[in-house]
Image (cartoon, rainbow, N blue to C red; front, top):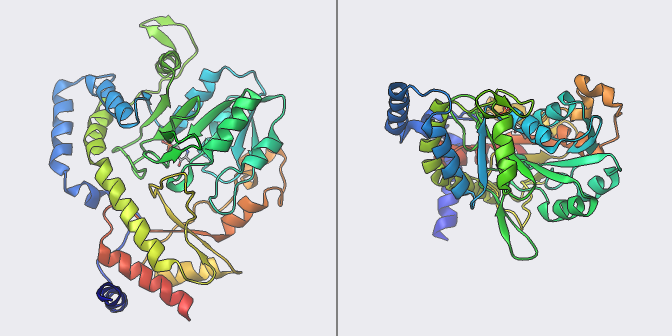
Length: 395
Ligand SMILES: *Cc1c(COP(=O)(O)O)cnc(C)c1O
């Protein structure tokens, strides 16, 4: 009883007193408790002056790899390059098809298109927002070279079915894990694996807003295959095994020593940040579970959720926009990830897909709304957001 009263009291208080300004992302607040560690890393890097491929890069790769259960980690310049390097490493013939979700960030398709491969879209599931295995199966052709699954918003795609489909078809499973670093998936066999370490290659991004963000651009590749890790390493560094010995056409895509040094600091604080995100996600779930027309994020019981985003689905014509405005009037920012499915982006019109072809992705673009969720968000701010959201549905 006491806790229910406490909660109700919180909602009332929160409705009366707006707390400190709320932002979608507050990296300064997140860094504040370990700013001195970041400063020390910065200074040491400047003094050592090994700015490209300095010792912090491999040290960070080793530390992240052991955090991810022993995967090989190859750092690179950003998450989009990680996808490009992955596709280069697969050696697919020109025009080979790569199956991608119709609901994702555009970077997932860019690498495919730029390499002269063909993005083949598959619709997503309305509950998890991620690749529908049945749609993937239907999209397979003799030309399919890879399936590119995206772990959207912090939860794993259906790795069980996708891995099965890919191995039966003899195509590579690639995981775009820019949004779910640290999430785990438990297979029917009882085996549990980290997102990004199940497919042939997994990729991630250290863009500042990601769960493990650096202070600029950065990315990495994951694989369990040592020989493939070494290929990826060469591809990310001009295709060279040794200086001036270029075995492949590669990229200049290296993680700066400075970013690696800062990421070593942030990796030490990632478990606490992840626990904070999960606690905030659970509070949102409890506070918003019973609102008509509002769907809280569906949980796949096989996956943990690291809440890169807390994304609602709002049903009803114009309701999403009305809620967005209501929140804005209460000084609560919200965001739409993503407003347009990839097949309706002008640059991808050449693929020839039409409106209505991916109905789930198209509907999600009309209905999704992400609320602020970051480790710097306070309990008072969270309660205020919940109370303000509830007030919209109560009228
Ligand atoms: C952020 C992101 C990327 C791209 O990462 P960058 O480091 O910005 O290049 C790719 N895919 C998804 C799903 C992302 O969220």
